[in-house]
Amino acid sequence: MTGKNQIGNESKAEGTVKFRTFNPQTNTENDQVFTEATDVEIHEAVSLANEAFGEFRAMSGERIGAFLDAIADEILALDDALVQVYMNESGLPEGRAKGERGRTIFQLRTFADLVREGSWVEARIDTAIPDRTPAPKVDLRKMMIGLGPIVVFGASNFPLAYSTAGGDTASALAAGCPVIVKGHPMHAGTSELVASAIIKAAEKTGMPNGVFSNLNSRGIEVGTKLVKHPEVKGVGFTGSIRGGRALFDLAAKRKEPIPVFAEMGSINPVILMPNYLEKNKDSIAKTYAGSITLGTGQFCTNPGLILGVKSDTLTSFMDTLGNEITEIKPSCMLHPTIASNFESGKLKLLQQDGTKIVNHAILTSEPNYAQQGIATVDGSTFLNNPSLHEEIFGPFSLVIQCDDLDQLTRIIEGLEGQLTGTILTEESEIADRPGIVRAMQDRVGRLIFNSVPTGVEVCPSMLHGGPYPASTDSRFTAVGTDSIQRWIRPVSYQDWPNELLPPELKNENPLGISRKVNNVDTRDAIS
Image 1 (cartoon, helix red, strand yellow):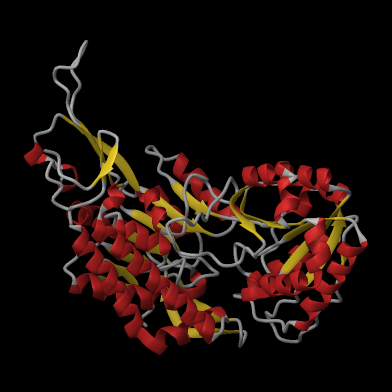
Image 2 (cartoon, rainbow, N blue to C red):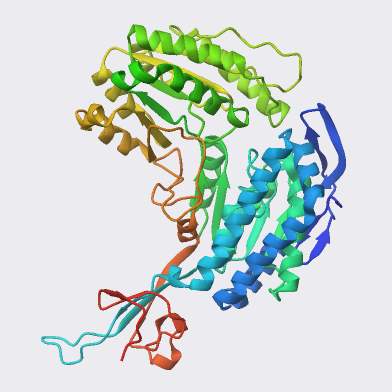
C-alpha cells in the first residue's frame, strides 16, 4: 500500500490532509498513512471519467464482461494480503473476509455474464406502418444506455461487497459508466488494494484511462465536491439516513440535478403471529438470537423490531430470546465511533418511559465489543413515541407487546419505510389477516415468510431497497442484476436507417438478444 489516490491509471498524493485507519480489535491505529484527495485530484478523476465514457459506453458486452471478469481475477490474486488488511481495518474475522470476497467475485462475474448476453438493454421495436390511416405510423426503436460517470461511496459495514468493487461499482461498469469511488475512511487500505486490482484489470483488457478512480477521504469534503461536480451523472451510497439524505439534497440543488440511489436505515420489523409462536417459540428465539447478533448486528437487514400480541407465550419467548442472547459471545464492532453510537443509542431507548431491558447486560472488558441486548415496550407506548422507531445499529432488538392484532397492524402502518418485513406464521393464520400483509407490503421492499431478514441473495428477483428512508427511490434495488437499472436511461430512435442503428436495434439482431418487437418477445430478426 502507498496511501495514495488512484486517479485513473496514476497514483497521486498531492494533498496535506493525512489520516490512518483503525484496528478495533487491538484498539490502535494502523501504520499506513493515507492522503486525502485534493480539489485538483477530484477534478482530474472526474474529467478522466467523462473522457473515458465516450469510448467505454461504445464497447461490446464481450469486452466489458472481460473487464469485469479480470477484476474478479485480480482481486483473487491479492489473496491473503487483502484478507489481512480487511481484518485489520474492520475487526471482522477471517471467515467473514473470505465470505465477503466470494460475494464480491460472484457479483462481478454475474454482471459479466449479464452484459455478454446483452438483453439488459431492454430493446423495444415498433416497426412502421406507412399506410395506416388516418395517419401513418413511424418506426420507433428504444433501448437503455449508461448515464455517465458515477460516484460510489464505500460502505462502513461491507469493506468489499458494498464498496470499491462491490455491487454499485460492478453494476455501473456493466452499464458502460466509469466509476469514481470515494473510499470509506475506516477501510482505506482495503479500498486501495481493490482499486489496484481494478486498474490492473483495466490495463490488461484495454479499458480507457479514467474508467475507474479511487479517492481517499477523511471526512465529508471529498464526497461533497464529487456530488457537486457537473460531470458526475449519478451517485450510489450505502450508509446512514443522515448521510444519504445530505447527498440527496446536495444533488437536487445542482444546476443539473442527478439521481442519488442511497440505501439507508432500516429496523426490519418481524411479526410473530400467535398460533405459530405458540408452537415454535423456543426455536424462533434461538434462530433470532443468531440473526440479531450476526456480524455484530452491523447489517442493514438486522431484525431490530419484533412485534407480537401480549400473552404468556410472548413473555416466555422474550425470556428465552434474552437467555439465548446471553449465550452468544460478544464480538467486535467496526470502529470505536460505531461502538459508541451503539451504546448511546441503547441508552437513549432505555431511558424512554415504558421501556425495559429483557436480558441482563453482557459485560465485556474488551474495547469496541458490543454488549448485545433485548428490550421491550407495550404497543401504545411505541405508537406514541417516534423516538422508539429509530434504528440502533448493532446487535439489539426491541420487542413490542401489542394489545391485539389490530394494534399490531396500526403500528406497521405507522412505521417509516423499511428494507425488509418478516411474518412468522402458519399459512392459514395469515390468510385470515390480509390487512397485516397489505400493511407490511406498503412499508417494505422485501416480504419474508418464516425466515430471517439477514442475508441478501444476489439474483435477478432480489429487491434490496424500500420506501423512504430505507432508500431514496423504492423503484430500484441495490443488489442483484436489476441494480444496473439505476445507472441507465432510455433513448428512442425514430425512422433511423437500419445501418445507422446500434446493433441492439438493427433488423437482423446481430447480437441475438431478446427484444420486444411489435409487442412480442423474440430473438428473431425482423424480415
